[in-house]
Image 1 (cartoon, helix red, strand yellow):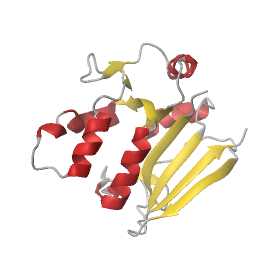
Image 2 (cartoon, helix red, strand yellow):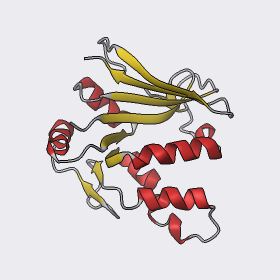
Image 3 (cartoon, one colour):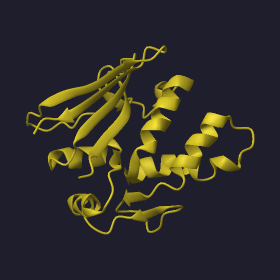
Image 4 (cartoon, helix red, strand yellow):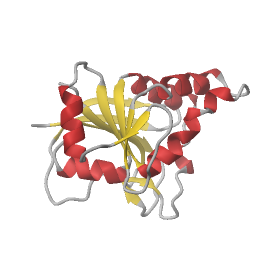
Length: 187
């Protein structure tokens, strides 16, 4: 069965976006960027909320910029054809290899898990991840922890009142002091 993963850059105090809406502190160095690119290679479909979808639209045309370096073009070449499902109550159309979700999150994930293949189903965006976590649909949490304290903002982890036990699968420390943590939900 395909795993549902939630992977983002996160501050040490647990936020993916600061109180001012900024996330410039997550700009990865080359080593972290290559790692994130390799992570996306394992994804068979990416579920996005509207805000993340709009942020990631950049990658739909990034390959047309001849001044970009190889690793940036490589990420664009992986991201652009990747199937994406966008959850939005305001968008009426999406671009590229994306479609608007036709059902609720649980229905979409159930349908995608039933499809053949072993590639991950990735969730992007805190709002969507909160809903998936509340429904018990996330199999793995993958956090790239940046050495910064934001003091507030949008939290990485869902703020619901239930305990979730996790099993550590992998850690990695990058030369930039970013620490990667990969946990599987203990069932």
